[in-house]
Amino acid sequence: MDISTKTATAPPPPPATTEKKRATSGATRPGDRIFLGLSRGSGIVLLVIMAAIAAFLTYRAALALSDNTGNFLTTFEWDATAVPPKFGIAVLAFGTVVSSIIALVIAVPVAVGIALFISHYAPRKLASPIAYVIDLLAAVPSIVYGLWGAIVVAPNLTGLYSWLDTTLGWTGVFEYQGGAPRSLMTVGILLAIMILPIITNVSREVFLQAPKMHEEAALALGATRWEVIRMSVLPFGRSGIISASMLGLGRALGETIAVATVLSPNFLIGASLLDPGGGTFAQNIASKFNEASEYGRDALIASGLVLFLITLLVNGAARMIIARRKEYSGANA
Amino acid sequence: MAKRIDVSGLSAYYGSHKAIDDISMTVEPRSVTAFIGPSGCGKSTFLRTLNRMHEVTPGGRVEGKVLLDGDDLYASGIDPVNVRRTVGMVFQRPNPFPTMSIFDNVAAGLRLNGSYKKAELNEIVEKSLKGANLWNEVKDRLNKPGSGLSGGQQQRLCIARAIAVEPQVLLMDEPCSALDPISTLAIEDLIGELKERFTIVIVTHNMQQAARVSDRTAFFNLSAVGQPGKLVEIDETERIFSNPSVQATEDYISGRFG
Image (cartoon, rainbow over all chains, first blue to last red; front, side, top):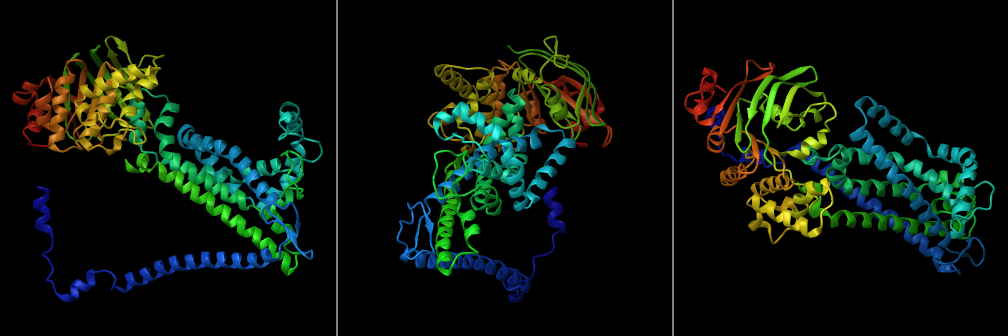
């Protein structure tokens, strides 16, 4: 019956004139042409910008590196204006990576928990206010986080750090001398709060998209709510959690002003994460850039290039993790 | 192991909307009962009240009794999770867990219920896949994802998953509506074998299918859109399709409406 009505109401096939053909072939319509130009143009602009940034970083970095008398990778010193200059990124790389990892370790479980609560546990009345508050966290400017971290958070962490020192101090990593702990650990905790919203929001979106039919499959087998989440929601959301974490990691790696405000930097790699000291790429650039000579700036740009490469590596690794499980991914369902 | 279902005075709601009204019926163990009726008449909703899946829908609630060999599924203190472990379900669209291998899909329900030794698990998975007439097709690729199978194979995988936990009752919600005729035939043959061991209730839009697979048929109808669905009659399938006692049933079956 369906078919007969369709053929009855369908218009007769248009005469195959050349004009009609051109009109339907797409690219020759002005609207299509403009849109094609716009989208292709945007794509090209993006690539050009990336290439320009890479070229700029590499060129200026090369200038600085050719005169560096220290080992760029291993020197624990940043004396770029001295004659001859001597600087290395070891401390910065260590501080950046360690503070970001601390941030991820703290933020990811909490964010996934909040996201699951919003998507699968909370009654609707509660879910949207919570989601809104999380969004507000993302809207706080990072300088505010920095000031809050330096003035409120850091002094209040002394108790926790003393406890860590007495229970885990023997490891060396959690040794604490006392005093204002404007340290990598404090930076990590602050970064965790800062990257919490993005990880939460992206994970929540992914969890909400988990196919109902797989949740029902689990339910029908007699799964509890947590088992439903474990069998159908988390496997589906796995790659989403990874990309969310990488977005958060990207922000943590590059965070500048909050770190510069909280950290009391030096150019040493201490065994302890709780005592002040250390530094990160972005923090170091921000604190030194204004006073730096032309030469000093090139050195800072060289460190920026390293940060750029680290971020690229992180992204590549995330993509590999996601691609490896593609065969099993929920997108194939 | 197969149990009798006695439903009395059962109504189901979505929020304030009454979806089915005052349904009573008995389903005999080791038989196939088919639910037929026009879209929106509440047959799927009714099916989902039999394993307490209805209340998972936001606003879903149920009044009345469903007795499984005399035990009320809706008595206070009954955990719906335990109900669903004894009343298995197969859905309209095949829904194997896409992140699990074929083996893990079949073992999924078992792993929820307790710990099994590897050998036990192997044995039950093989038995269930054989029971679902799928073993010969997948025995060489048990560790491949279930989503790589054809639609009909996926549906049989879902049946294997459902029967692996040895439920008392197996509910099937239009299990063949997303399948081609050959896969449909395979599932129908399978239903004929499964009723030796399980009580089976199947919702179908395909009246020939109801006539082919079921022992008894229940016809559901609704008086108007927005009105709750009702059970018109339930009788031996042969009788429903040859000489039903209600005129509306005959009209529906002979294609005069719906």
